[in-house]
Length: 195
Image 1 (cartoon, rainbow, N blue to C red):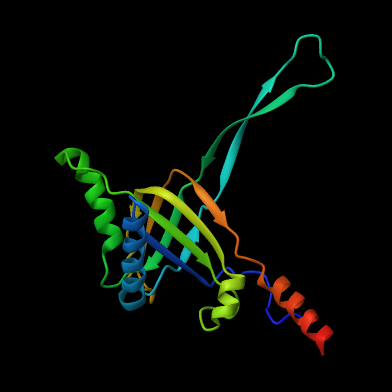
Image 2: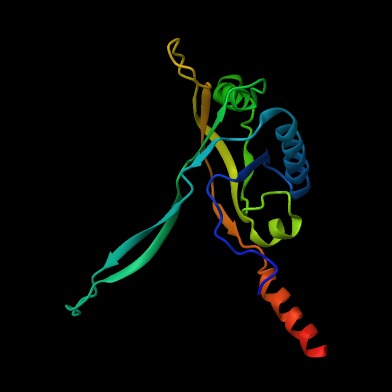
């Protein structure tokens, strides 16, 4: 019996942390500040869609070979990530998009952001051991906001105003946590042998 739970990651428990692209230290400090601000002001994102990648394939017809066509890998492209959240007092997504939209007009530099998307296990952040063993982590590099969508106002509806931002990025990686349950089971077996 394992001490750690290994259920699948549920789709409604996640964090998204973004920080300024740059050196590793600059990005880490920026992400830490973002996490602190999200915990205090933002309340997090309500939806994250678009994580994916696709690899192009090229066909090559070799002369004299009539029973098959070679399929060779090409470039990998990544889909845009769309984040949605309820509008609140924090307007950081709007500022990021607006400042980048006018950067070219004013001759200033674009602000890119790296981001981490963390899928939490069932226990969420309350159980640190479960969090360390069960969290799934995706990381995108050098993100740029390409579309911002504001809330839809309707006087007859009783809904939260949702804003969204679409982020184009230069790569998506997935980090797998260590499988601690295997090591815990192994340690328990050793202890049982000693007793």
